[in-house]
Length: 540
Figure 1: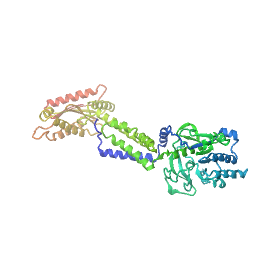
Figure 2: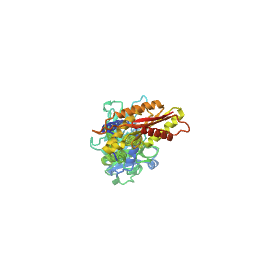
Figure 3: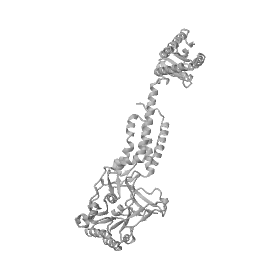
Figure 4: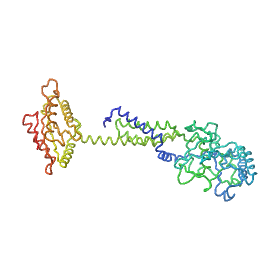
């Protein structure tokens, strides 16, 4: 298969155009829904064995039925914490709203604070209250008595994408500055700066009144909801859970009962919801095993997308372009999948895939158009071929019949062409045909004029809206220009000349294209009989 006829300069220009358009689409996140759909497909079943130290103590329907209506007295949570302390739990995240004091019995707060101090390894949540109306965003911390007793505080802000799916987490967030670790990160108790993600894109926009977030990562879930080990809150409280199951565990205590617990959709399934507490437990498990998915920085994201589209343009200019097209088509998705599975890096593929598709579409249209042109064009001279001539003559004959204007058909023969071929060879003969064809094309200068190679050394011109006088002027100029051509070969005194026959009529219902061909052919033979290097006309 031949290489692309486009010069490299043109290909490079198209590659730059594809790069810019794709990079702009990537930067604008125009196809974010398609990106997220691709992400969900890639990670939906990409599960792992959860960290064995992570456990969820679930406030489930059974616990509510056994202990009573929610909310429970805080002394109940104090008793649970003592159970976990006695069992030797490694760390406990108490994922409960403790932002207001117990107004019925202040001793409840004191009991819970004391139990937290006895444990010494309790993490409490910081809630984010978004700005609404005249109210500014704020952090909702546990009451001071309880907060001061905790080993650490962590924000429980859940990052939900525009389609309602929780795919990521900001490892640090807070009002003014992102100073609180995520609750799951605080539970994992990793060294400072051990877990980092995509930085805040606008760190200079710090404000004491805004909720700031930093270190974004995608959550790699251990599996669908309830994949992590869970025990019932009531069972732990009643001593029905073996202490060995709780020893050295990082435990999230939180609501899982339907109708009360926050519910989240995840990439693992759309059929079941995940509670906010299990979401935090998944974050802890992920970080403990280093399974977090980092997001490619925006600049790199845009550059890679643009480069893939530009590479597609360049590949199509090499040999085997159809193979290049087939290889280019999955390039965006394949790159994304490989980065995800081998390096835990998320690179959004939709913009690159769309850019490649657009490149391939334009290329396919161009190729089909080129094939169409080639199917109607003579390969040697570049003029229309016999098929194109017949189509044009039929169209112009019909048009002239409707308009009542004359149509002229010109048949042209290169004089003594066989003699040129026999003397100087076929290569020189081909050059003669190309030179003559170029002059014929130059004289068929109007948009509807059509020049064609009729066959061998014969050419044709279809001249719509052209009376006999106009056709005569065209062919006289053409004959003069051909006579001015240099001799075909050095030392050869013979010149290139033409013999031409012209047939001009206003078509009616009885006059068809083959009548024009017959009339022009008869005129051509009269011109040959008159000694060649001239023309004969049949006009009415």
